[in-house]
Length: 167
Image (tube, rainbow, N blue to C red; front, side, top):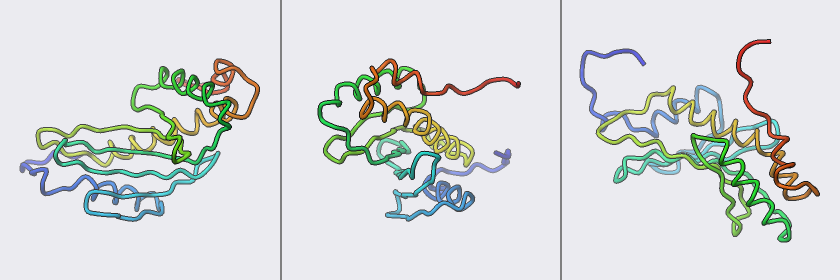
């Protein structure tokens, strides 16, 4: 973000306006549900992901929720929850949960913008990219835990870690 000589009060730049700019830049389908909420659909390798970002001015938090449908057999829920816990041990910038009533796998993250902080487009882009990356990375593990005969540890083994360095 470029350095500015003038102070910009955070009331002048709404976090959801920045999210809308990022979504438009990527040409993602989005809908501004309210002043403080936007939802978009992003195509991944495994499936389409619904991403909702909502600004809570009271808490000064920009919340990101990335969801995808999942209706696992009831007798495999314990294995799915164990894989969720194992996956959450491997991520630092959010967490997975399963909303059984809605049959949704959920990635959640909150960006605290207390003290008149302004989210940079790069931050928001990274939040969304991390959510998609996490969902894409662990989707096969969730599938194996829910429908395969794999143990949770075996199901998690299929999740690829990010590559570092060069070949």
